[in-house]
Every structure is written in C-alpha cells, then in structure tokens.
Amino acid sequence: MTPEEALALKEVAYKLIGIATGEPGAELPIDHPPGTVPVKPTGVLGAGKVRYWPQPIEVPRIDGTRGMELCYSYALRLSYVARPDGEMYVPAIFRQGIGEWMIKVAPGPEQSHLYAATVDRWIYPEDWMTQAEIDARLVGDQQWAESYRQKFGV
Image (tube, rainbow, N blue to C red; front, top):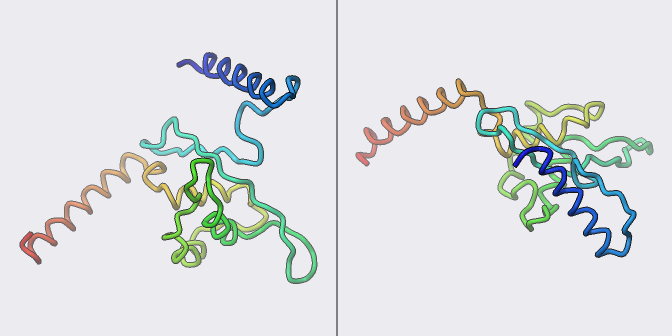
C-alpha cells in the first residue's frame, strides 16, 4: 500500500467515525491518535514501525510549582496504563529495573519530548539496533551458548 492509499483510507475511516458518533464535521488527527507521541525506531529491525506512546504529563512538584514528570515516573506510570490492545505500555517485569536503567540514560524534564523514544528503546531494543550491533550481539550469544554447552554438557 502506498502512502497516498494509506492516507485515503485514514480519511475514509475518520469520516466513518464521525458519522457513527454523530459528528460528521469533526476533524481527527490523521498522523497519530490524540494524546500520543509517535515513535519510529531507527534500527534495521525497526524500519517502518511506528508505536504511539502517551504524552508526558505535568505534575505538582515538592516546592508547590508544576512541571513535567521525570522520565522515571513516565516509565513507571506507563507500567500501569494499558494500550488499546489491553497490554501495558511498559510490561510489569520492567518495573524492577526502571530506576537503575533511568539513572544511565534518562533525559531530564526539559527534554520530556524524548521520553517516549527513550522508553521505547528500553522496551524494544532490537528495533533500535544497527546491523553492526545485531552482528555483535549474535557473536556474543554464540559465545554464551558455547560456554553453556561446555559447562553443562547441553
């Protein structure tokens, strides 16, 4: 399907949604769902993929002011928020490592526009890998498998 065909299908879908909801003139965004940030992985395996993450939110701070949530709290919050398909944005198993991982790579609140891509890269690292990184990982996996066979005879 060409991009033009996809756009035409989206326009038809939004018109049908408008008719079904009784708001035929309503304009819906055609690039991504409202309240979300589109993330397009840049790796070899992520080419052509797009995932939509909720936008970071403004929260009260200890000093009484308001500001953007931290990347840590964004990731933690999304471990309790379900995607449209019913799965959590951040699987619960990742909760244990959020603090350690965020200390290493998290952008600050002044770069909250990077939160969605940062968390996406953490949850789906393969989609962000270059071919060289994939090759290096395969070599490492093969070395681990060989040492495991030698150690346990499996």
